[in-house]
Image (tube, rainbow, N blue to C red; front, side, top):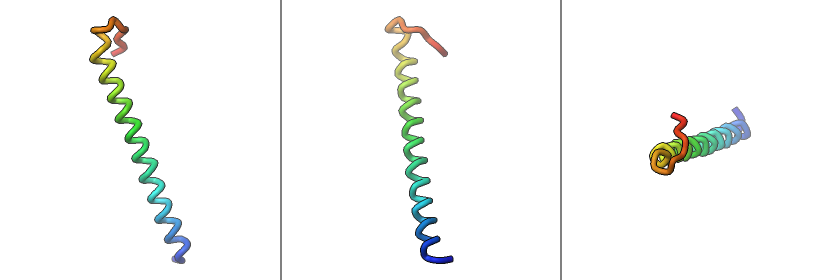
Amino acid sequence: MSWVAIVLIVIGVWVALKVAGALLKLVFWGVALVGVYWLLAPHMGWPQFF
């Protein structure tokens, strides 16, 4: 394998980890927002969807 292929593999793995981290952060924010809504909806008179 040439050094160009090794560099491309390393960059590809790094980008994949960055994308996975960003998606995981979005999922955690979504879970946090749903949790806050679930806790506040009964007190604020908002509709409960679940």
